[in-house]
Every structure is written in structure tokens, then in C-alpha cells.
Image 1: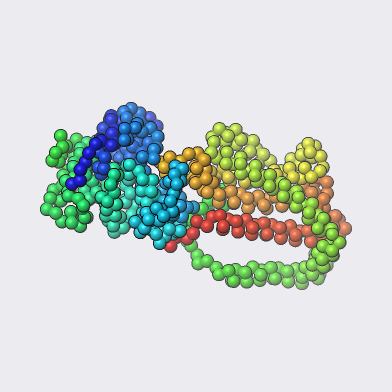
Image 2 (image 1 turned 180 degrees about the vertical axis):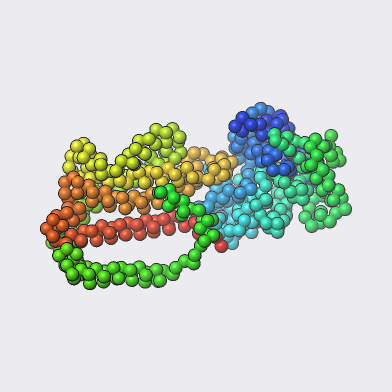
Amino acid sequence: MHSVSSPHLILEGVCVEIGGARILRDVSLTVARREFVCVIGTSGGGKTTLLRTIAGLLPVASGSVTLGGFPVNAPSPRAAMVFQHFGLFPWKTVRSNVAYALRVQGRPADPDRILRLLATLKLDRVADYYPAQLSGGMKQRVGIARALAAEPEVLLLDEPFSALDAITRESLQDEVLRLWENSSQMTAVLVTHDIDEALLLADRVVVVSGPPGHITSEMPVTLPRPRDSQEIRGRADYPRMRKQLWNALNGPGVTCGPGTT
Amino acid sequence: MTAVTAQRGRTGGRRAGVRRRPMSPGRRWALRTASVVVILAAWQLYGRSNPILLSQPSSIAVAFADMVRDGTLGHALASSLVVLGIGFGTGSAAGVLLGLAAGRSDTISALIDLPVNALYAVPAVALIPVIVLWFGFAVTTKTVVVFLFVIFPVLINTTRGVREVDPELVEVARSFCSGERRMWTDLILPSALPYILTGLRLAIGRALIGVIVAEYYTSLSGLGNLISTNANDFQTARMFVPIVVIAMLGVAFTALLELAERRLVQWRKTPQ
């Protein structure tokens, strides 16, 4: 397991209200620099709200969000988001969609760097295609490339694979795993309702249930890195971890896992 | 009604479900030519029964050549095109600008929606006496009439287009720290563009109506004058010439806009 160091993202007693309804209740979470945290929970539990709050898209009713020492109260270039619905501009080509992340912030979009990024995500051959010409898996590759182009400190992923078919999902999960394990500095928070996805990617899984959403338990994932999806699922301790997470999801308030206080 | 037209073009998903095989360009042009030939031939044959009242395509062609040669057509066309150009230009510019503002700002929308709906409901023809009283019989009056015919379909479609911006994409833009100006260029204008073009296409037909109506009801001039005076003189062939010219103008302008739409909205390609 790689080293997990200083706190990078800190949520303290965060409450979020939308239209008078409380969506998040007293959420406190500390994510270390270069840690990969998966937020897992059933639908409607507030996990996407949690991610949007971290992204600065939603104001907090009380509590605070701090990213790299700075309070978050609006979207910042320190974080970049990958969306469940891909969120590509249909009138921009793959290349322009990726370069958008830089241009919109007034940063220069070096064409060579964009092209290298496209190549990393196997998009170089469709660089001049429009999103309507791509499959769901390819669209999400563009979404990921766009977020990476911004060179964020924190990568926020909102159920990025849930709109994809099972086979595409697995190969893209592997790819995100590799990209993140090879990156030097990136912190990641991924929202999912998929137990295997959380175990594959996370250093730590946070279980959120609601409404109003609150953290019911946490579980460190001690599987060694670099990971391989097929290999970890064949490990002897994998069924036990899976069961543990399953129980945590279904029994609110249950704290489980080794090392959790 | 106007918005429905735009929406049908936009919802690619639904269209894909009942997608028919596209017709080859050659076949399309063959069918187009055939329909025109059949109409002209039928007119030519039937027109023989009463050439004075019904006229015939052949005599219209002769009259066309005459009127080009003696300059009456060119003069009238120029006069009508000035009114059409200024009226359409100012009307669609005002429609687009007001539509963008009303689509983006609830304040502006609340300020203009009652007057717009009221003016849209009143037939522009009914306002002509008022416009004449205010602006006299000169070119200004006619362009104001065309302006009133043009502005509403453009304004209403543009507003609708801005309103239809995908809220998920707005959130994407916000998450990447987009400023308001980039919001317009990356998101609002491209997504409103198909609606604006639909509004312009509807407006072209209305602008041509507006020109002729204005020329009938204010001081006689331009193509409308040619139609009216030649009809009074039972010069049916000469009367039909400006009508055919108007029809051709409509076809040409619509084709131009379709070309612009294909160039500007080329991202809307069929899924592979």
C-alpha cells in the first residue's frame, strides 16, 4: 500500500439543504493527499449531493469544506469532476471537449498535451468525432480525459460507470485504476453503489445512508497496490471484505473493519 | 407551434427510433424536377381554356423576359428587396437579442412577455393604419410592417432555445469554473442556435408576406404594386411574374438558411 500523508480534503459537520429539505446531516470526512476514497450508498442517500458539495456546486447550510487549506464555497480549478451522464458538449469534438477544461479557465491548451492525453485514454483515433458518434464507454473516456486535462488536485467521480454496460464498465474501471495508480499526486473521491467497484479502487470506503445523508461507517481497503480486478477477486480475503461492506450498507450505524475506531 | 418544429429537429433520440433510410440526392432532385414539370405542364394545358384569366407558363416566361428588359421587374424587385432586407435584418436582430435576454433573465422575460404575446396575437395587418399614421407612406412604414412580421417568431424561438439549455451541461460548465461569457459561447449560443435558425426560417416566409401586404396597404410600390396594377389591367401573365419571383425568393432564402444550418449544426450527426 502506498503512503497516505497529510489531510487534503476536510469536511467538518457539513449540512446541506435543498429547498428547505435537509439532504446531508453533519458529515465529517478527512481525505488524505493521494488517497482514493469511495463513497458508497443506496440511491437517494445523498452521496451525489456530498460530491457536488465538495465540488463547490452546492452551498453548505452549516459546517465547512476545506480543500488544500482553502475553504470551498464555489467551484475551483483544484477539483475536476467526471459525471454519470458524461456531460459532454454535443457541438464540440472530442478534442475540443477535452481542451475545454483548460480553455474555460483561461489556461493554454497545448495541442500536443491534449493529444497525448487522448492517446492515454485510447481516444486519439476519434479526436475529431462529435459525442453523438461515440459509444457510452468512449463518451466517458472523453469525460475522464477532460477532468484529467484540468490537472486537478482532487478528481471527483460521480457514479462514472453506472451508465455503461457491464463489460465496458469493468475495462474502464481498470483503466481509471491504472491512471490513478500511475499519477503522482491526485486525490480521488468516487461515488458509487457498486461494492466491487469500491473495493477495486478505494483505499477507504465510506458508507453514506439517508436521507438525510450521513456517514454510517468506514472501512479501509487493505488490498495491495497495484491492483488487478481479476487478481483481487480471486484472493482468499475478498469474500470476507465484500461481506463486511455488504453488512455495512444494510445495517445503518454498524462500524466495521479492522483499524476503524 | 413554432417551438414544436424546433423540438422535433432536436430530439435526435426519438428521431433515431423511426429513422428512415435517407433518400439519395439524385432521386430527390429527380422527384423535385418531376413535380415542377407536372405542375407547369398541367397549367400550360388547362390555361389554354382561358388564357386571359388563367394565363400560361409560356406566356409568363415571355412576360418575364419583357419585364426584365424594360426594367420594370428590376426596379420593383430592388424596391421590395430594400424593404425586405432592412425589415428582416432589423426584425431578426431584435428578435434574437431580445430572445437571448428574455431566455437568460427572468426579469427581462417578465417585462416583455405580456407586450410580446399581445402584439403577436394582433394581426400585423390590423396595425398598418396606425403605422401609416405614425410613419407616413414612405419606406420606413413598410420596413416597420416587415419588422413586426419577423420579430415574433425569431424572438419566441430564441427564448425557447435559451430556455432549453441542458441544466446538466450548465452544471458541467459551472464545475469547470466557467464565467458568464464562456457560458454563452460554450453552451447557450450553440444550444440555442438550432432554435434561432428555425425562427429565422419561419420569419422568411412571414417577411415575404409582410413586404407584399405593406406594399398593398401603404403606397403602392415594388412587387406588390406590379401584382396589383397588372391584375387591374387583366395583364395576368405580367401579374404572375412578380408572384413567381416571390416564390423563388422564398425558395432561395430557405435553401440558404438550410445550408447555413448544415454548416453550423454539423455536430448533430447520426449516431454510429
